[in-house]
Amino acid sequence: MANARIHNALFALLVGLVLGITAWSLLQRSGPPRLPAIPELAPPAAKAPSRIERMIESGELSREPALFWGPEAPPPEGGGD
Amino acid sequence: MSTKTVRCELCFRFCRLRPGERGDCRVRYNLDGELVSLVYGRPCAVHVDPIEKKPLYHFLPGSRSFSIATAGCNGHCVFCQNWEISQANPEDVRSEEMPPAEVVRGAKRTGSKSISYTYTDPNIFYEYACDTSKIARGEGIKNVMVTAGLLNEKPLRRLAKYADAANVDLKGDAEFYRKYVMAELAPVQDYIRIALEEGMHLELTHLIVPTLNDSREDTERLIGWVLANCGPDVPLHFSRFFPMYKLANLYPTPIETLYDAARAAMRMGMRYVYVGNVPSSEFQNTRCPGCGETVVVRRGYQRPDVKLVDGRCPKCSHRIPGVWR
Image (cartoon, rainbow over all chains, first blue to last red; front, side, top):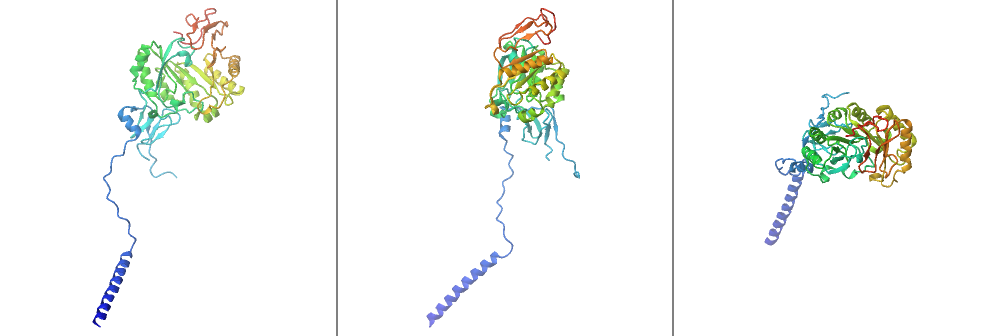
């Protein structure tokens, strides 16, 4: 008789545990979808020089200022029609 | 649009370049908002050639010309004879350091009377050609531009202060330029007119490519333009095409086609007509238009026999245009 009560109590405890975990799990899934964590960014590094720029740096290509050129004017603000 | 975008104003293309971009010529580069030449003082070809090879037949005949080129070109001829350097990026072509003063020293050391800016096109190594020409002029060495003539007026007038002579390729009509040079005819015609205005000694070369610009109408139209805009005294060279680059499957120009073109030019009134890239051409000597006397005898690239006396025919004293000494 006593064994049966202990058995029932253990069974109830087990069922309660399973129901509790399930409920907790369902609660965790509710609400807005969560985004994956953003990894911490490294501080911005200087742009890697291109092959041409490396060759200019080493003197294999020249960097003589050219003649006959000008800055390209930016487009007018407000745009046209 | 980035404020570091620049516009190159050297040739008709007016390339707009953002930082890190280069022009159609491959050698003018936007380095963080500043346009730079990648090839200044870095020739990839240095040779000593007879001046007749340029070809210039009325300019210091029999002399040597110290000849330099860098990689790149602002024309893209499908028949280019020097495509391995003209259609290459400068970083992919072996070059050597040779600042302007050293080029002039090289010319003097080799007994060259001139420096030729050639093989590719001096227009794209403009700053290098200008600075070298200026030093050369001071040392009594002449400057020769061998060019396709794709240069805007302002830079050309600046260069003309130091350029003594030019051989300009006149390759065909407007359609030919669009299809086979990826360029335009009008800037070349302007170059020719300005070169004459500026007093440069000018000779023209027309490469005849079989099936592309070898019809009688093509040739006569070109000769007509030369006569109307340059006059009959500008030496005109018809040059033979050999299979090359993207036209490697085409046959060489038949010699008779070249001779026909030369005869047509003479018939139309041109006085100094030559046929090049042909051994023992019957159109390689200079004849006096006054009396028919042969006044310069040429044998390929050997030293020619110049019979002129002070630039005049020894028989009838007709003045033959050119720079003879």
